[in-house]
Image 1: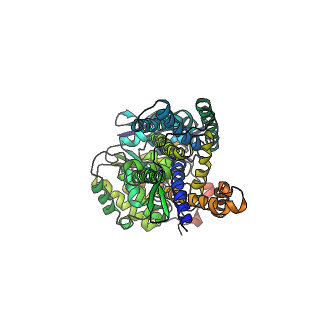
Image 2: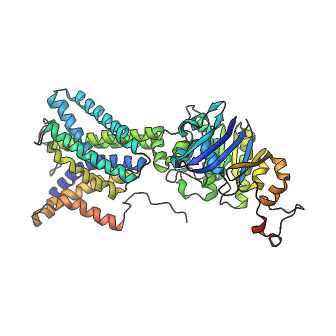
Image 3: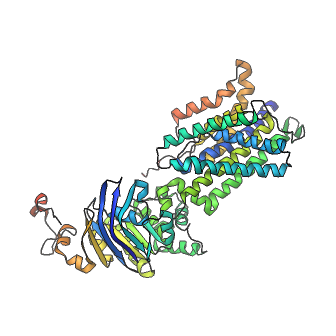
Amino acid sequence: MLRLVNVEVKYNEVVLVLRGVSIEVPERSIVCLLGANGAGKTTTLKAISGILSAESGKVTDGFIEFSDQRIDRQDAERIAKLGIFQVMEGRRVLEHLTVEDNLKAGALTRKDGKIKEDLQKIYDYFPRIAQFRKKTAGYLSGGEQQMLVIGRALMGNPRVLLLDEPSLGLSPLLVQEIFSILEKIFHDSQISMLLVEQNAGIALQISQHGYVLENGRVVLEGSAEKLKENREIQEFYLGLSELGQRKSYREVKHYKRRKRWL
Amino acid sequence: MNEALNFLITGMANGFIYSMIAIGFTLIIKCSRVFNFAQGEITILGAYIFYAAIVQFNLPLPIAILMTAVAAVFLGIMIERMLIRPTIGQPILSTVILTLALGGVLRSLMILIWGQDLLSLPPFFPKGGVHLGQVVTLSYPHIFFFAVSIVLIVLLGIYYSYTRGGLAMRVTADDIVVARLLGINVTRILAMSWAIAALIGGAAGVLLTSVTGIHYGAVEVGFKAMTVTLVGGMESLAGVIIMGPVLGIIETMVAGYIDPLLGGSISEVASFIILLIFMVFRPHGILGWKTIERV
């Protein structure tokens, strides 16, 4: 459904960030995108949602397709209307608006009258934020804000949800909670998700397929099961040693053992 | 005592005019962080257009009002399209300087077309007013000021707080990138803010000059409104709506009680003295956005 073919992205016409990334998100699936800092994960999402131009970035080669329609030259507004919603990194709630207004803002592109019911649905998924309907969103806790921005994107009735590190800066318990809700949403509805994560363990738990990005290139891809079995992934992203046990940092000399993919 | 009450009413009536102009500042600041220094000129240009419609073209009052409204909206949209939109992405300061230049151009345009003389609108209101009790007189123009400005402010408030269009404006004000990701056409929001600012500013200009007469020098009312905006809080509509009448009252009170003692027009600078005090001790104004810090 969503397809990136050999996408190359440059910032300021010089800085090459993506060097030919090809990714596919099929209908009704969760695909995760793993990689270290600076690998180009967020840039990939921004290229899809069309907000690169605000940072003088540009798709300079390859193309992005959504339901057989090219979207890499379109405005962010138009792409959102097609049903691609990005949840940005770092919990970008609309600080000065109430929780309910935040959610309603997600539904601004919609013309159908089912917004009330969908609001209730979001509150059912995230009971934590239901109690704060009238509260100013900027004062919610980090976990609640993350739930709010996910809920806001869901209010737009997305066909694809782009999630940028929903686990960032949250306690392990909250991460578990948010991911189990994401899984529930996925099972209840028809939406696909493209999930960018550093927390590979939990990302591979809920996704069917995964890509590993390094230095602007896809260096590894496969089904989530296969990736979980992969030794490199186990060692560098899941922190397991060869025997499948937790690694002792005493035995590792990081500086020598840094993995080179290419 | 009755003197004081009359000052109060005059001050409040003037103050609502300041509020209307200040709303224009606030709307534009909220969606683009641009301080529009041409707001005073747009206000008075609205008055001149109304004068042209009713005196020079001799149109009946309702049509003249409609024409002025259409012209003001058109003016706002054209400024946004031709001058502001091309500067998106450049530093905010260059856009701000641009509005300063635009103000100069509009001012000389007004002098070019309508000359430097004081023009006066035909009197719409009968002399006198409604007597409240023994001492307070509410003159007809003042009643009209209150009615028009309050109706416009309330309508705008309802639009801003309760409709989808208003929500889109508030979202854009809060985070422009998120607004685009949610499918909001932010350039249209920007155009709409300019249109509303010009419309409500033009209306304020007509009200103001219906009493004082029209003169290009009246653009300095823009600076008074600027004070209201800054003291009320740049991002807060409620702040500027409250601050307008407060400042208007302070001004007439100072004019009534302090000016005769000192023999000067302290009232003219009273608002700027208040502005200075606020800028030093409470720079975000009475209701402006503080950065939200979670504890």
